[in-house]
Amino acid sequence: MEIIRTKKELQKYLSTKNQLGLVPTMGSLHRGHLSLVEKSITENHHTLVTIFVNLKQFSPNEDFKEYPRNLEKDLDLLKKFKVAVFCPSHKEIYPHQANHGYTYIGNKLLENLYCGKTRPFFFNGVLLIVLKLFNLINPQHAYFGKKDFQQFFLIKEMIKDLNLKVKVKAIATVRNKYGLALSSRNLYLDKEELEQASFFYQSLIHAKTLFKRANFNSPKEIEDYLIIQLKKKFKIDYLKVVDKKTLLPSQELKGLIILGAIYINKVRLIDNLEI
Ligand code: AMP
Image 1 (cartoon, rainbow, N blue to C red):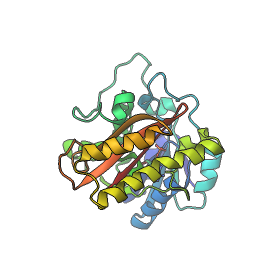
Image 2 (image 1 turned 90 degrees about the horizontal axis):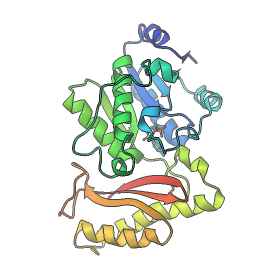
Image 3 (image 1 turned 60 degrees about the vertical axis):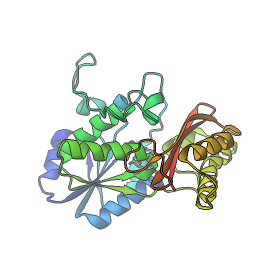
Image 4 (image 1 turned 120 degrees about the vertical axis):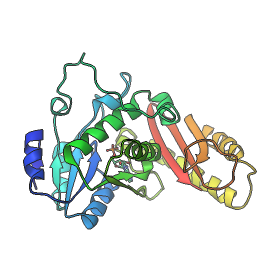
């Protein structure tokens, strides 16, 4: 398996590849990431997985230092697949001095809503790294998880707004047997907390069932119901039921998605469900 660490090595690798699928990750890989890798392999001649914990998407008080990193294990997992891996250093991607300004990528409407409200640097950092990777690699396809629905939405908006050529695909969320969405941050949870965490998705599913039985008269009623349920076990960061095509509030009882983030102690988990 080819392991690429510098932009120079990357250019050499790319010079012989005419069609490529990209899977950007922050490593600490699990079955969720691997489902993106598998999809890319079936749809492209070559697949490049990137592993890069992107400092720019963490706020100063967030878990950049503690974020789980296990490059050896990740490379070992990827060996089974027909992929190459780009795992650059911070300096390779951000060669400027710390005090150097950098171009700002954002989404005026949505960067400060939902996940962006508690994570003010998050979407700017995500869009910046994703755009950099698109420009460095020029993939035909790129694969992202639906678990990070708002992230995928903003990447799609960026592609439209900036006339990028890459086609992006959203892959269904991979869950454990209790429904909990797999996440690198689940490693922060002990056994009891992991069990508790599955109540998050189970509550979303329950709300969907009630919604299908016409128990709610507005998206707001679904939100109110879920807030009461989730408060029993978690501190809620946000819980919103919005139009899945715009990610904005809706009065309609169709085309909706539930978006939410909760805390278990200090660990913040996100999930969503189209209803
Ligand atoms: P991350 O390493 O957390 O930045 O995630 C890298 C990519 O994997 C993103 O596109 C995520 O949405 C996706 N991803 C993370 N967890 C899952 C999951 N449980 N199922 C499917 N995709 C996922």
